[in-house]
Image 1 (tube, helix red, strand yellow):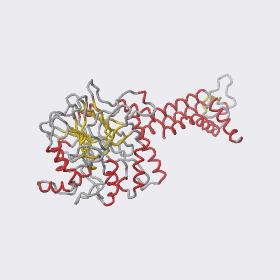
Image 2 (image 1 turned 45 degrees about the vertical axis):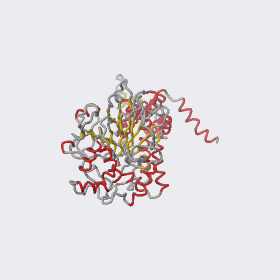
Image 3 (image 1 turned 120 degrees about the vertical axis):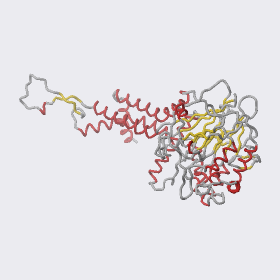
Image 4 (image 1 turned 90 degrees about the vertical axis):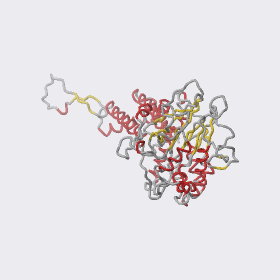
Length: 525
């Protein structure tokens, strides 16, 4: 015990009695850590909002593809490196959620935007959830993402239309299935692939809404279905003002996979519907019960197909308004399309095929579509699909259907700036508006801010520990004493050598860094 005290005492005294510049650097680094680990996330969230009028509004936070990284996600890398990726990726998700839900340190600094009344996850909650065959392992995987989103309560049943959330209530959340959650169905039967069957059943049992025979959200005695209608009531009238429509995206792919022949006849379409019986039944019901007074908002995991003139992912006037552009140049054209493609193992398909997409749009007549899966931003307009519709998204033609493919909110899914979308529904004129938003670039925070500041701090310490010394030892002995001897800057500790200088700087770095490092570690939990 005495030896431990003798070792700690000089270090503690050095930290407390260190020169002023050591104290200043320590405080500065603590502020940098707070700013980069929390502040930039709250700042990014506060900068992206929609105008708030005097009317009552309902706000939906749309999140996509968190894809929690777990052990075994990347089989080709070492377990240690995989654990590092998992930690920082999941920690990024938690920082994003704390900022968007206004929890934790920093909440009081920014009053806007108003928190969400409802959260919609567009699927792919974990990266490899579909491959689990043992329930305990699968359940542990699900708990890992639930722990990253404190305050979430999965919305699965209700006996009345959804209204605005009270500030003290948890955040109700709708969870859609993605191909990483339940896999894609077999193209010939529409049933889950054998490797994904157990995970698909477990995912449905835990997250799918309870619906009645008209696919409307009901109490816990209703049937479980990924295809559901969620009525909303905004304002004081108590009437249904908007309707959220959830569609099983993987089932749409199963109706017409990438290798299938086009569905050009009624018989071919009927056969495709038989491979997605529940999904097509709800779509047909919506087609037979159109209500122009209640605009519909469609959510699905996999983006819908688009026509040749609708393939650009950046709508100029919209991108100029919200400032979000597509990063991927997979089509070799900036802002280019999402390619129709898939893989040989049939684990993903980039777009729902054209005939099924047209069937969905014509039947449901949505005012707007939100999709995920692609990981990058894509905003397109499906033109002339709506008929006799009164209400539409602000700025768009009532006959058109805008679709927003929402960026992944994860830092490991191939985009520098992850993102999300705000959807705002109004009680006046059944208004609908949305805005894509960007999140911080975590790689830039490390390499563009942390690393340069560390290099500058170390350089400052070297300079501070240097001194001006006469150049006498380097000049001839007959150098005139009447002339002042030149002085040079020597990057070394006074009276010591380079090794001593390095030791002193290393000691000062430790005196400066222990408090910021401790703070950084606390903010990782």
